[in-house]
Amino acid sequence: MPAKKTETGSEGFSAAERAAMKERAAELRAEGKKGAKRADGLQAVLDRIAQMAPEDRALAERVHVTVTSTAPELSPKTWYGMPAYANADDKIVVFFQDSGKFKYRYSTLGFQDVANLDDGDLWPVSYAVQAWSAAVERQIVALVKTATS
Image (tube, rainbow, N blue to C red; front, side, top):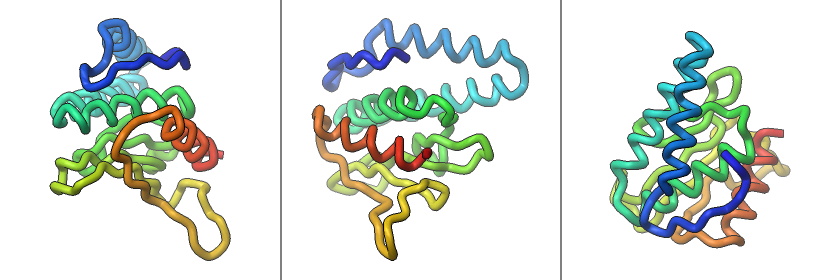
């Protein structure tokens, strides 16, 4: 995915973004068993995002683009029915929980214990996300970079 930001609002992925993701999934399947597993994980994440309510879907799509462009080494997959991104050891590093999953008033960006977010004896591992903005994107990019460092 190119790092170029595209505004999609609640309309979802653009046709070009959907085509690029389908092409990438086909490339991964062509790489063999490991590539097929990654492609299946990507498709599962895209399918799950497509099932979300419009507000959650818009956030999940931006999170997906941001995480995959910031940390392309992470593999998309679903985890407890949520879009998630795993490291080379297949351990979940970051996940997105839409507000509709448990009828919360906000969506959540969460990090698992393999994320390198340690900061003393207390640090946050879950963030409420209610709206997308350039500031939110910058914060998520910084968190994902730190988590995968």
